[in-house]
Each structure stands twice: as structure tokens, then as C-alpha cells.
Amino acid sequence: MPWKEATAMSERIEFIKAFSQGERNLSELCHRYGISRTTGYKWLKRYLESGIEGLQEKSRRPHHSPKRTSPETEAAILKVRQNYPSWGGVKINAYLTRQGWQDLPAPSTVTAILYRHGQINPLESLKHCPMQRFERATPNELWQMDFKGYFRIDQGNCHPLTILDDHSRFLVGLQACPNQTWRTVQAHLTHTFRQYGLPDCMLMDNGSPWGDDRHTPYTILTAWLMRLGIAITHGRPYHPQTQGKDERLHRTFKAELLDQVQLHDLQDCQRHFDSWRDFYNQERPHQALDQAVPAEHYQPSQHPFPETLPPILYAPDNIVRMVDMAGRISFQGHAFKISKAFRYQPVAIRPTTTDGCFDVFYCRFKVSEIDL
Image 1 (cartoon, helix red, strand yellow):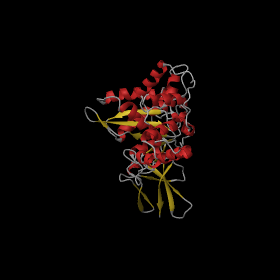
Image 2 (cartoon, one colour; image 1 turned 135 degrees about the horizontal axis):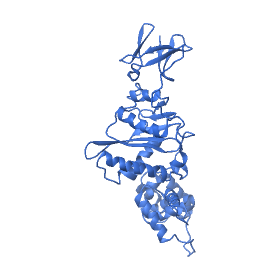
Image 3 (tube, helix red, strand yellow; image 1 turned 90 degrees about the vertical axis):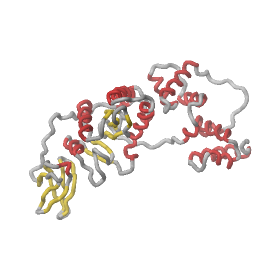
């Protein structure tokens, strides 16, 4: 059925707006506006390709079109899409440009080619709305670290550990781990720090091995990081959006590698991880970087990894106490729980402006409070 002629344009806009806001499913909307599902799909596709202008009725008169994309170029576009099914027109255009292709069509034309060959579902495309992004101003201000969900291999499980620079999206670490223990993570971080230096801060969730819950934020691993001078911050519990860049990386990693190959053991995993990490950092255009690659925006840290841990020193006017095996300290005749993460190490007690209240520091970081 056709649209009502008197209000065709306005009804098309209302139809698109209603669907994008999730008011109801496509069948219900088509029935509401008195059109067929075929017509509904047609206008969704035109809107995605050309925006509001695509909702205008097109002339049926014959007309000349610009030079048609060559079959070789179309084949190259479709091959990239086949290799990377999650890539759209903008990323494919940027990737082929970096590969040296000449006279490529505009990204919008690449998108149109994908539509023409049935490579894009209009309903799925409409769900991907632009979002506001926040990032640190320079490389190594913040690294995000997390485990991608484990998967089975021939013997045991593989736990992919990802470490991502917030500013550049450079993947500084991608390791195939046999477990999620602090010793395993520390070993891989040591290798990464030797290669790229130390970040100012690291963001991670509240799970093991870098946290137990919001009430126990310190572990042996995070105490080691603090000893190196790295600030630790945790995402809000049950709020993975805090580590949005790492979460997005995990989806890309799954779509472009884990869903494409059969992995057998940890050595096999690491070979594929290393190859994909090089591709991600050096060749794969990144939308948040205006289709540049992460390596173009990253440089190693100016803070080298110390092979020997620096001594823990406090100012002469600090009150220093040793944390016992249970994670407690004694102060003015009372025992106060600090954290087992700092056992057998000194902490500093400093008075605050409130009478009877003190702050407890480990190295340069405040880790607890005392209220007498």
C-alpha cells in the first residue's frame, strides 16, 4: 500500500522516529501507518543510506548516474566485508585506502554497495546509535584491564587478558592465560611494563584478582601496582560501561578472531592473539580515531619499569605502623583492620583536620581512615 499522499513525508519521518525509539515492532508500525512491510523496509534502508533526504520521493525519469564503481573495487569491498563482517562502509573505505587502493568510492557508496549485495540488515543498523565518548588526553594516563570471558580449549580453558590504553585504543597486552590468578597477571604485566613502561593509572572491575568487592578493593596484585606508583581505580559494581572501551574491544576481538578460528591449546591461542593484536594496532582503522590506527596515536611511557621495587619511605612526621598477618595495625591501644594486601608492609598514619580522625597511606595512596 502507498503512503497517504497529503502527509507522505511527515508520516515517513514519524515512522522512522517511532521505530528507532523502539515504540513497537516493524509489523505493528507498518499496520499503524497503512503500509506493507516491503515499503517499511524500503524507507528504513533509504533513511540509513541518505538520512532525511532519502525519504523524499525519487523521480522515475531516466537519468545519468556518476561513474559506476568498477567490478574489481566492488569485489575488494565485499572481500573485506566477508573477512570482517562487523565492519561498515567507513571502516572498509579507510582500510582499503591504507592498503593503497586508488579511486575508491565515498564511504556512503561503500555502504550502498554492501546494502545492494545484502551484506547489511537495515533493522540491525538502525540499532547502532552514535554515543558520546570520553578519553584521556595523552597515552598512558590510563590503561583499562580485564579478562575476556574464558572459552574451552582441548585441555582446560583459555582466559584472554586484555590491557588497553584509554587515549589511543592501543592494545598494549593480549595474553592467553590458563587461569585468572594474581601471579599469572603479574607475570604478564611485568612483561608489558618492560616493553611499554608504566601507566599513571589502571582501571579494572571489582573481580579477582584485582578486587574482591567494593568493600575489599585491595589485593596482592593491586598493592604491587601501587608500590610501582600506579594509581588504581575500580569500575562501579554491575556497571560494565565504566570500562566501555575494553568491553567494546572484547566484542571486536570475539567477532574478528574468536568466532572465526578453532583454537586448540594455549600456544595456538597466543599465536593467533599476537597476530590479531598486531593487525588491531597497526592496520585496523578505528572509528573513534577518525579511522586512524591505534599505533599512530600511541607512544611508550616515560616511566620505565624498575627491576627492583622501590623502598617504601614516609616523611619523618608520619606515624608508621607495620601491617600484621591479619591485615591489621595497632594505634593508640586499638587494632584497626586495613587490608591483608599490605601485610608485613609499613603504612603511614597522618592526622586530618577533624579531631580524632586519621588517614592511612600505603606509599603515596590513601587506603583507609581511622576514627578514634
